[in-house]
Image (cartoon, rainbow, N blue to C red; front, top):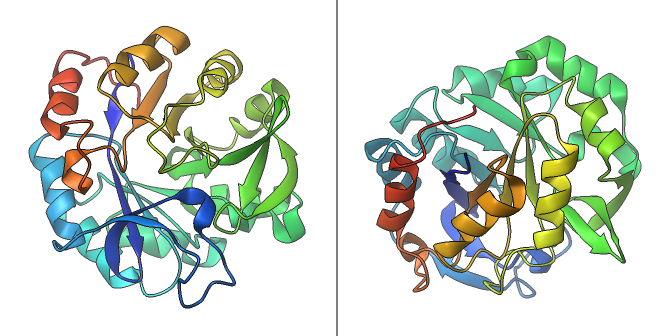
Length: 262
């Protein structure tokens, strides 16, 4: 069954909601960044909220430098329950597990020079184990295809999201995380075709993020995916300053959809 997954996006040490397409490696002073929400409350507040309401499988994403302290604070709040992504490599993956992460999420490290590197993936599996690894295949749409994007979703890799890609990579990880970067943070609706494709092609659990704007999107994703895909809300959620979706409604949905897959 489709369930609601929580997120804690950290940028410059604060919990934020950002329009995904405006993130940039070169925009050091943030002039090009479009931010929907900046929290006054610390990261551990949101971790505690997920813990108190049993929102299993929530993820923390570090969006750039100066995010480690806030990420660690959240992990300590709910040990061995939250996933962590952002700058994960073979060298630091085990340390994040030791700091309290349930799983590590990896993207850019697997694509040096925008080309998939199997040796890096195999090294990560040897370091933390398949069950502790999530592969982030966040993507941008080009025509009728979805291309995996890295470096804050600004660089397109040579890897397309296909049935063959998902079947191959599923041998090395426990689940996928997929942000639809073109609609991330816009609250204009999900990429329904991508949700259907992920459900048809992936043999393991997938969490989709991007564009969700109403509580009915949980029902929509469940119907489109036959309950195979989970959904994350960001900017539309009231705990992140949104007015379209109530966190308590998402919690209530999860209470009636107990067949959790992870």
